[in-house]
Image (cartoon, helix red, strand yellow):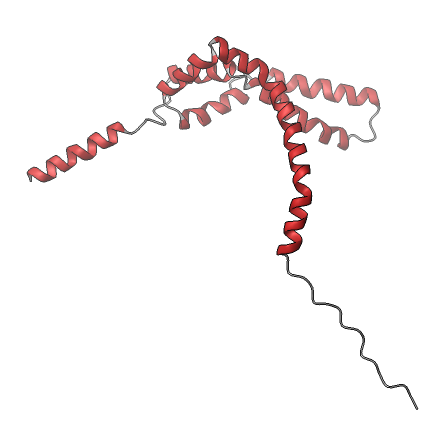
Amino acid sequence: MRNRILGGLIALSCLAALPAHADELTEAKRADVMRLLKSSGSVSMVDGMLGAMMPLLQQQCAKCTAEQKAILQREVTAVFRENVDTPDGFLSRMVPVYAARFSHAEIRQLLAFYESPIGRKLVGEMPGMMKEGGEAGRAWGQSLEPKLRTRLQAAMPQPPAAQPPATQPAPK
């Protein structure tokens, strides 16, 4: 009996030592996650979504005039930006994503970073870094293309060599 109690206490102490990844989503935690989303530049993710979506919309509007395309871009951008921070907007929908992965204490640590001078600098530099990083990634991928082609050609089964057509004896 004594060993069971001791084992239970040890198990409980091990569980207590595990880092908390998620806890209850209180109003205070919700408010801190919203603050974190704003501090960390998550609103700029909407601009990224717009950047990816606009070429597709423009493509669907192939017969539109230049003026119509400009109106499309202006209005889609306005609707996205007006609704990013509404009760049913992008930021509100991101709260549970963060809340499920980080405890309230961890959210506060992230806030401390993003609200610090270096955190604000990171947020300010991130759009340029993402653009340059994308360009670096594309260039790197293109540089791997010859190696990849060689590797795939060596690894892929080769079709059987074409057999020359059977020769038939010439008619006599």
